[in-house]
Amino acid sequence: MKDGGPPGPDQVHLWRIDLDGAPSEAPADVLDHTERTRCAALAQPRSRLRFAAAHGAMRVVLGRYLSVRPAALVLDYGRWGKPGLAERASGLRFSLSHSGSVALLAVTRCREVGVDVEFARGELDLQRFCGRWFPPDERDLVAAAGPEGGSQLFLRLWSRKEACVKAAGARLAHGLHLPVGTCPGPLLVRGTAPPLLGPWLVRDLDVPPGAAAAVALAGERPYRVVSYSWPQSLTFPHVNNGQLVEDGGQRDRPGSQRTPVRAGLP
Image 1: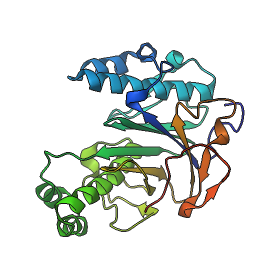
Image 2 (image 1 turned 180 degrees about the vertical axis):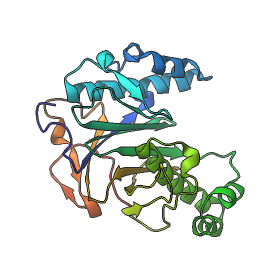
Image 3 (image 1 turned 60 degrees about the horizontal axis):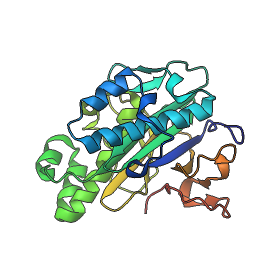
């Protein structure tokens, strides 16, 4: 970026990507071998299109931050598959999640980040799953909420856990027992064993009905979320006209015309 630059140490730039309306600026041919292999392994054509749209948009956005062509970005992958920039001198960290027609890309500087978005999974037996994997207070809360409320609450807890897992570069199995709280946040999450010791500062994000999303940032320091929409906000060098959302739901730049992905709990 030429105006405003990459996120500050205590900022998260959060991009919301409409996968079914992705523009030609994010072509599939910018993907690397690993991304193409994963894309080709998906059974449904729509899933392949959405995967390519999400990862293509991610490359375009990261390329703009670094002044690098999207196809020239070199990614490396951690032990359990977490992607990162092979050249880490920039300090940029990122996390990508996509579910259904929505993708979220979180970009930070010098602090590990994880983001997750989830839509309901009708085939999952929530009570049985939570009884086996979730801490007792989370299990009981999901059970008490009933079928409809329990489903939404499950998604919220799941997205918090997965955001922490992604920030840590761990496997989902590591995070199922992770206590992520049953109250509105932001909340500080601490694990009891590696690789999820934390701490992670977790916030829920506003997404369409029937979904839940969360972002987790390493450390205890508060942070702000600057929210953008793909591709509307990609009008560099004016990209930082995006609306800034402070902790506690206070918003800077009230004159902005951008429609943000709002941060914070309802």
